[in-house]
Length: 210
Image 1 (tube, rainbow, N blue to C red):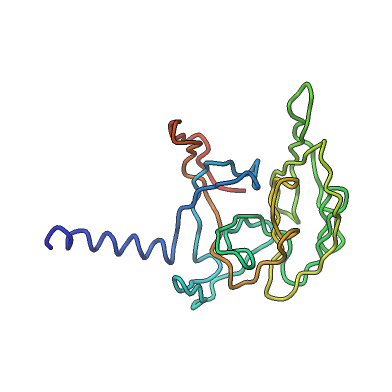
Image 2: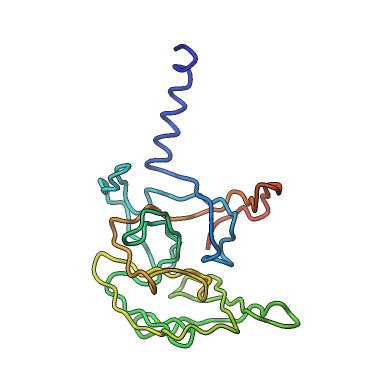
């Protein structure tokens, strides 16, 4: 009993931190490449968009709202798994995607080519996209074309999410908008990368998430 009692304050601190402040997550898929890689361990600010009750996820204190360009953790509609994507459309925004170019409220989001890889026989591009003042990198496949161009107006209380790996992401183009109640928090930092159990953890990618 004495041994357990000595650990109780530590457990309570960890519980409070994970429930209300900051929680670690691991990136399991390539949908956010090149911003986030499979095996990245990230930190998520759980109070950036309001303090919520654990399990119920009910907001009890309103702190802020998602902004266009934020990298956000959430539950997609009708799914209990955590997803991480970038906020593309806010409530009321008109989002369009044509020929792999993004438009928000009729304005084209500028893209600047960074690299075509592999160098000798390129199969994909890395570009810097300016999402209404929020620069970030995206990946596009050269040999693959997704024919489903679209235009959509985001409904009140919802957000339109897309992965930075535009041709390899299951996002709002597939399962629809994310309701505000499904938000978990804002991803703000990478603290470790561990690609697999058979490799050593690396801290080369430590830094803030753009």
